[in-house]
Image (cartoon, rainbow, N blue to C red):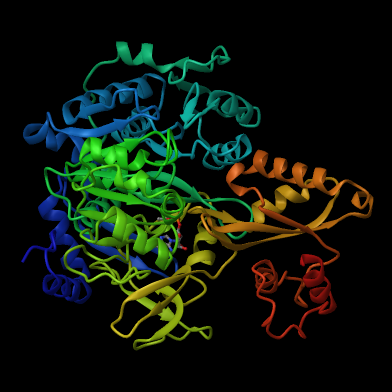
Length: 635
Ligand code: 6R9
């Protein structure tokens, strides 16, 4: 029996049982057999969820890029590692072999070193989906610098907040980026962000669009001339298994984003293991995940997981609608993609289009389809299954989070029978629990509750950068001794899990997690706004859209409402980015509040989704009368 590669259901159950009976033994075997360590660990696992402290493979030494690149060179040096598909279908795709990737990462690493970057330094990466993005983060890992990728669709304010939070002295970016028909001036956004980041000393700029940019002397440098001169080999920095590999920010339910810290050894083992099994990856496959590397899905399942397995991973610069809605399928046909991994929001958008966009292409290379980011509705699941997978490709509905580092609940294709809208069963080593509101675990099947995980797995985030207390409060305080995910879930009669959505103040719009607090903060900056509350409401394509309830100051009462709406959305775009714009805005006199002054979002959510018949008990509110008037105004 192989622990590493599960091939049928019986084997899954055997491996799963073993992984729960003896997690240390299980992960030790996986780590021993499939990775290159410079030194083995002293202990496999030490943990205490009450502190919380977690360490995997303590004492072990490694460099993750040796595992993702160097060790493949002898057997698959000429195999394509990264297959870059540009935004413009007429621009040629680029096949970067493992040999070439090695050289490019080493050169980039040497450039970083020449610029003074050292082990442990934070480097913020604000690059579009071009090869330099993957190369830059691997270069950081090569020399032990901690990368923090900021999604290149975020605004300058979001960028500067993250740069300052992690204390980066260097930013990597490009002149601009292509997204469909649009060109975005990334460098200009960086320039604006850096006005409030005094500690940033160096900006390395990749040329992509050739657009005009301002280069600040003594700070901004074109990276290509440096790469041309750089030496083509770079001795990897030897890291401790528990040294941080990267920081990735995710929205929280209050104020500032949380810089989730992932470490080296456990993250590598878990992303590689889960990639192999969830996608049933085989040597000759061409795997494509459409996420952006600015999100955890891109980190774990475009870069680290696939490369650790010596896979060919597609990196796509464009969008699903350009030049038309057939683009995904054109790319699948062109590169004979075998595994395709995308988000429900993309599936819903494509399902709305004429079916010809799909049927025009030969999708027979596909073997496995994946989805991630939010619950997938039944209709979208069937469309994906029938029209993309031709009913032959198992759909892996993969549930996980930035915090978990890798996929925790998912079918294993060709082993686990799938069920629409269900993420199905936990992967080996994952011990889920459903909790009731009193903090008791709900045993048995056909139950629902709050989803927790009872035991650590190798890729769990170890802390929030600079704020361990917040890490403890957010994830380990709601239910004693357990990691709380923030999601609700149900377990059906055979033990399959279905994720029902967030139970906290995070709203998922088109697969992006948005905290309500930062959006409300942005709105409240408007001089005419007194107070605001944001909730999500169901949206055909985005999954959820944002609905804002806004109380104006007396001075704002006379203002033109349409102009106000426009200005409010502009503020949100500036502070967070266009993804957080409100679809609906309702100006209102008051907001329903509890006696302790907390906004009752539950009620606002119901009104926003026009489900006002059953509002529950509103008598405990401080101001029950306000509910009636909000309903009237919303009609
Ligand atoms: C990987 C990623 C995490 C949140 C998570 C949950 C939602 C992700 C899901 C899903 C239902 C799935 N989510 N996958 N909900 N079914 N298959 O998306 O990380 O951006 O941190 O979002 O996304 O609510 O808690 P992240």
